[in-house]
Figure 1 (tube, rainbow, N blue to C red):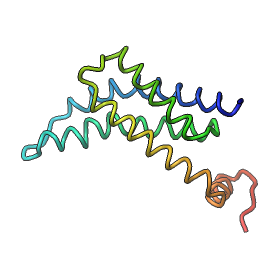
Figure 2: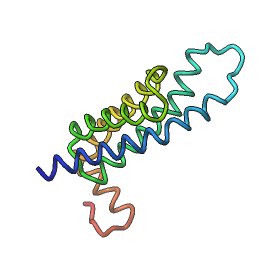
Figure 3: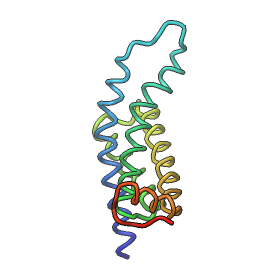
Figure 4: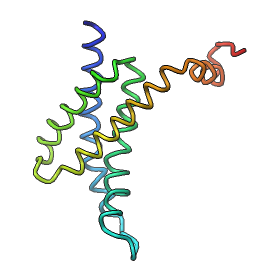
Length: 138
């Protein structure tokens, strides 16, 4: 029960923080001038939604999963609910389909990355040894 609650809270917190970061980030990336010759759809997908929606979701949710040692699926489900609710309050859901998709795809990528990093104990051991945390690597 304690693990499920911690996982749900990690997902909710990361969803709210991601929504609060990604709405202004998408506005800032939308203001970047598009080079001539690029298609608008490609520019929007890579720059606006990639840098403004995907990247904040990836960084915030992966950090929340690794710090809280949360169950990935519970945290992902609560992240999705929190992102939908927060973006509905902040910006409305009428035109936020791309923003929601970018945030959810970023959270899915963060879940996969955190699950991979958590299951590979040799990576953690080598990283901790590199930082000088006193763990010996053979």
